[in-house]
Image: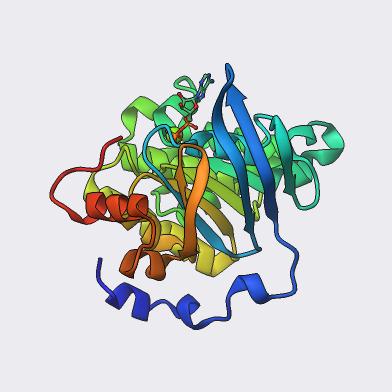
Length: 275
Ligand code: ADP
Ligand code: MG
C-alpha cells in the first residue's frame, strides 16, 4: 500500500475521535457469544465514535461475522452489553424505533445473496426508502440521487441483480444502506468477493462517502491490507478474543502479537490470505 494515500488523507492529522467529547455511537462491553457451548466471542469490548472507522481483522472463524450480527441487533449476546446510540440494538424492533434503526446499516459480503432477485435494483432501494418513511412521491428522485452518490448510472436502476456485475451490486447494496440516512455502516467483508481493481474502487467510494457525510464504519475483513486502507483504529480478533488493537498504521508498521504479524505476512506476501 502506498503512503501517498495516507498523506492525502487529512483525517490522519485530525485529533483522535477517541478524545473528543461525543459519546460513542456503538459500544460492546465484555461481549460473549457461544454456539453449542463453544465460544465464538469471549469478552470482546469495542467502541465506535461518530465519524470514526474501526477495523476488525481476523482469519476465517475468528468471530467477525458474529460480532457484526451482535452490533446490528440480529443476535443477542449471552454475556455483556451492546449499545447503539445508548440503546440495545436487539430491541430496536417497534415502529417508534424505525428512525434509530435506520441509523444503523449493513453492507454484506455477498450482495447477490442479500438482494431479492425478482426486484429491480431501483426497486430494492425504493423499498428501503419506503420502510424508512420516505413518501411515495419523493422516492424516484431519492433513488436517482442515491445511485448518483454511489457512482451508478441511473439507468441501472431498471436492471435485475442478475444483470449487474459484482461491483455494481455492491454499490446497489451501499445505496440501499444509505437510503435510511445511517450514522454507522457495518461492513462485513464488503470487498472480499470482488477482484482487486473493483475492490479498490469500492474502498475509494466508502472513503469518499465518509468524508462527505461523516459516516462511521465498523469495517470487517480477513485482509489487514484492506482494513488498513480505511480504518483509523484496528482490532485483531483471534478465536473470539481481541489479541491486539491500535492505530492502523502502528499495527501495520510494528505489529506486537505474533498473530497480527502472521496476518500482515498474509496481506503482503505472495500467498493469498486464507478465507
Ligand atoms: P468469521 O466471520 O470470522 O469467519 P464467524 O463469526 O462466522 O467467524 O464464526 C465464529 C465461530 O462461530 C466459528 O467457529 C463458526 O463455526 C461458529 N458459528 C458461527 N455462526 C454459527 C451458527 N449459526 N451456528 C453454529 N456455529 C456458528
Ligand atoms: Mg465472516
